[in-house]
Length: 176
Image 1 (cartoon, one colour):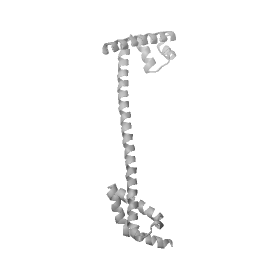
Image 2: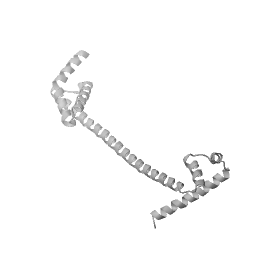
Image 3: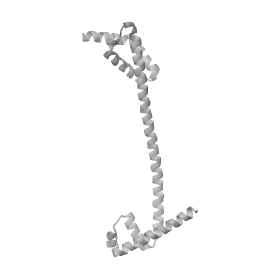
Image 4: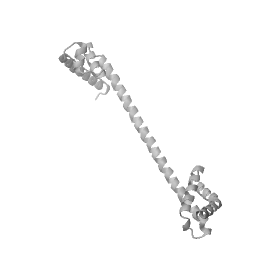
């Protein structure tokens, strides 16, 4: 029985595959997608062959399945393309934001280095060790052989001097 169905189905395939293929191709406009639609169409037809009422309607029934499958394929492609475009756009926006943030960070770091360089040597050394080398106050005290209180005092005076230098620059660059 199964062999008979397979034999009949292979005859149906041979008789109608060109019509189904060209129906799909006329919609999807891509040979690879049309072949996918052809396969999906005949898979569905194989599962539902008993739904066909007469042999005369078989060709149009297969063409209808192919057209619907082709439209589904286009919808699927459109969704994938849309998601890819959204991903590319979001990545570009993220990249642009990151580039802008990176540039701002580099400018800020350069400004800070210039301002720290303008400090007195005692303040400059303590500020560099604390902020660039990320040493703790106790480690700075040991390294410089000064008291922890002197380190705290120099950090405070260094911060205050930096604040003054940065606010003066801000006023110069952006007058009210």
